[in-house]
Length: 169
Image (tube, rainbow, N blue to C red; front, side, top):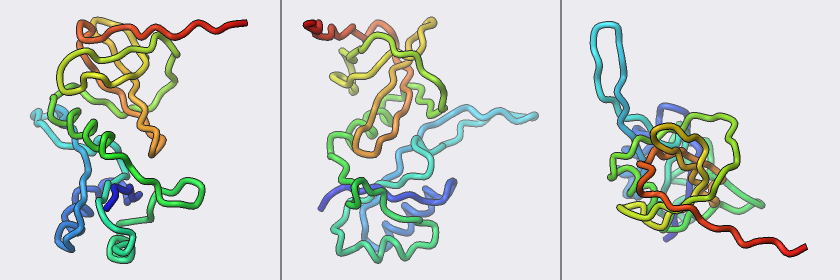
C-alpha cells in the first residue's frame, strides 16, 4: 500500500476522512489549531493544514471506493499517474501537527533568502527557505510529491544556515 493524495471539496476534509475510515481505508488530513476571534469570544479551532487535500493509504484497487465519496474530486496526478506520497512526507506533516509550531498556509510572494535546516526537535533535518525575518523566522517547506508548500513558524535559535556549494564559472 502507498500513500496517495485526493483533492476534495474545501471544508469537507474531516468528513471525507471519517467516511473513508468507515470503508476501512486509512485516511489522514493534517490539522492545525488557530485561535479564532469572534465579536463576543475567542476559541481554538482546527483547520486543515493543506486545504482541499486528504491523504489516503490504499491500494489502487480501492480507487473506486475512494472516488465514490461525492466530496472527493479525484486523485492528484503527475504525468498521468497518481502521485505517490513518501512516508517521510507524511511523517513530516504529523511532526508539524504534534509539535504545536504555528503553521500558516497563507499564500504570498516569497523572497528567496537563505536556505536553512532545522537543527532540533521533531522537525530536525527538515530543510526550507527563510521567507520572512522578524522576531522569529518563517521557513518555507516544500513537499515535492504534491507540489504544495506550507510555512512553519519556528524559533530562530533552532535554525542553521545551509551553505550552498559555490558554482564554478
